[in-house]
Image 1: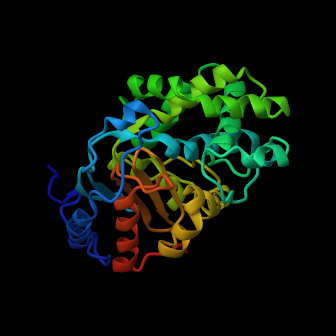
Image 2: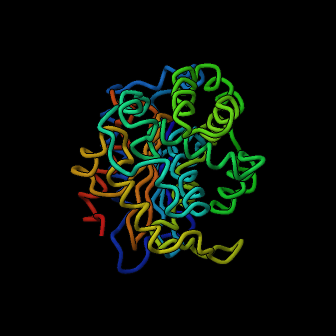
Image 3: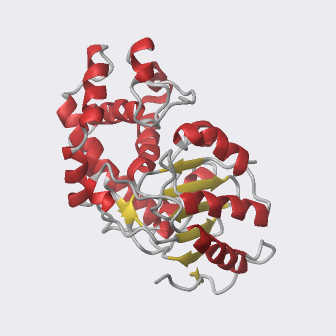
Length: 325
């Protein structure tokens, strides 16, 4: 059963801001009518076991306040949302050289499609489709002896959650069924765009995708993208310049055009915010200069995006007037 809407840690919305508490309550109520219109991801056996009728939402503002509704503190598998964090780490390491190995255009194809790889000589369209994420993971595998530890270290800093981890059961299930991803890795290796053994790249990729967070943590982890690349101050530590302001703007632009698989255009039209979705049912959205929004509901549409999550974000932008600025 979902929890009532509660603000954290502030007892009320910040002064001179949109009254988020009643808005989140309204969205939570309206979203219930959409249960049953999607299905949980079933091509990864462990994800097929997730209870479908769940919904959580958290809004974090750059003043440090967070507001939540429903199951915003229930951990879920980030899946493709982790591609965002892997891409940011690779961008910090490689800079503009990154674009020699991956493009930055919308694919217009399913997230696990192989169709364009042959005609484009093993260069994936963008870092957020599976082929692109595998290239990013290959880059990071060359840089880190233990990529899983490096990735968790970065995310633990951003969330101030030292116990953040990945789900071994989901990682194993995903690795055992990663036949298409393995085929893509070998295909790109034939073009010289995967340098490490594909088996090692897939091991790292599947552990990465199996990282778990809740909505409140995910909103916190992406705050640097709403704040010119700087994480906000917390009780645990001062804010960190995690990414340069110019790179943060570029990441947001890529999320706006490529962050929702082959539904990116529809998301940009309906929601108008940079987003990253995942087949675990999560979506994170960036409101530059204001804050971040994380939504989770595991029932997916035909393109692998959360049905209730997309609805909740669209309603939030309608009720608040927030848009990509």
